Image (spheres, rainbow, N blue to C red):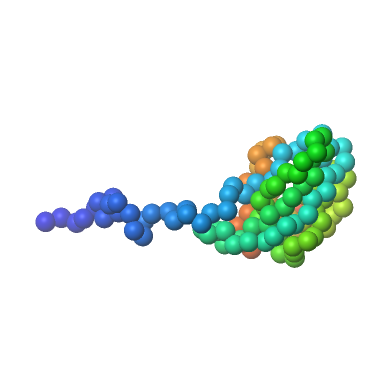
Length: 140
């Protein structure tokens, strides 16, 4: 007799299956548009919820659309210190505060940040886990 191979043990499911039934949705920043490149956009944190399969809490944020009469609902990984009802500013001219979204070129050295875009326009891929952060070392 031989050993039972892991792929055979996995079989149909149980503990080796990803449990994705209670997910709230994809977590990413809103697309960077003209209003954010030259000013800022205001949003409000509607709720902070637990997303199953994720350690960090998720914030439901509602931004005002700059061009049409509508609201844009997004999900973001909530940093420590964010609360429901808080106003969030996203853009080049936003003030440096907890929860605000700024380009890395506008943030001073030594600042602790999270949810960083790896490439321009990928809506934040790095430092999104619970307790994960990055520090800006230098601006070149």
